[in-house]
Amino acid sequence: MSERSLEVADVFRQYGPQYVQEFGPSLCTQQKRVLRAIALCRTASLGGHVERCDGCGHRRISYNSCRNRHCPKCQAAARAEWMEARAEELLPVPYFHVVFTLPNTLAPIALQNKRVVYGVLFRAVAETLKDVAAAPKHLGAEIGFLAVLHTWGQNLMHHPHIHCVVPAGGISRDGQRWLSCKDDFFLPVRVLSRVFRGKFISFLKHAFQQGQLRFFGRLECCAEAAQFEQLLDAAVQREWVVYAKRPFGGPTQVLKYLARYTHRVAISNKRLLDLRDGQVHFQYKDYADGNRTKAMSVDALEFIRRFLMHVLPLGFVRIRHYGFLGNRHRNAKLELCRRLLGVESGPAATTAGEPSETDHCDAEHDKSMICPACGNGRMLIIETFRPETKAASVRRPFFMQQSTCCAKPDTS
Image (cartoon, rainbow, N blue to C red; front, side):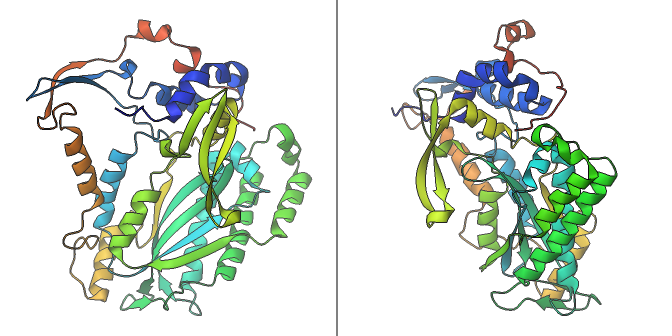
């Protein structure tokens, strides 16, 4: 039997207590909860069940998952359920992928004001796409799209950006026609970039004027209006990065793409290579060098710091729908789109013979129920056991206990 692969949880269990001891005051409640949840995921602390093969009698213990949205091990089930719902919303048209990136000069403000600035980022992206697409000289239509927030780069550093998946066309202003985009072209990137820049700066200024932003550490000087304006002026002088990839071929390709993208976390366990001598070794893609896969090593405490930078505020929605895919009128608008496209109502995501993301997860589940010893019998649950008692949890290290709210957010 092969040796178990390295996981983010292994780093957290081994170095989490030391990290909290040294940097605990800089951690918010959510970061401590994520640290604790991932460390306890699929351990006896969360309870579980005992399975026995109905053929050879082989037994094994399976522990419960933490179900935290930042945990690398707990995304498959959530992804499958989400994808099943999205399959019914896809249209039989090509889809574009557009990415909006926040400049490095403003990213530190986002890190200290996640809920406010990430919300501003979503709003600026949404209004940019809708306004530019609605302009008669561009598409002149109401579009719909899905937006997903990612806050990390391949090296785990803070890199806020939003991925948008957009059908290649929209509903005409009179609601009587489907207006298709030109082949391999959605909207002018330069226009998107400048409109996005203007809207984000405007919304961020408003948030500052309303007293919604807080500044700590080296950004404390930005609490003064003059310093804040100076920072924004510097950001405006630069071109903001917006790019559009070539369109997908159709709904099936879109579904496969979304399955990879929507429920990602900062780093997957598959990218981890080794943990030794206090160093975490992991793979990353170097986009500046032709997307080559390389290895990087960072101190274990630095690895934890980088991972926790990407913990989102409690209840913050990182996958959002806009335009005719907005939650309020989605069903009626999609019916209109299908009528204008001349297609029948219902799922358009998979073609005959092609498994869906849900089918894939069901197949993986069925495979996991086959006895690993004899290869023929099925593993059946014969006993369940509850999570550890509160008394037992008190004996765990500090970082694995329930945390309390801290005075300041992470300012690193």
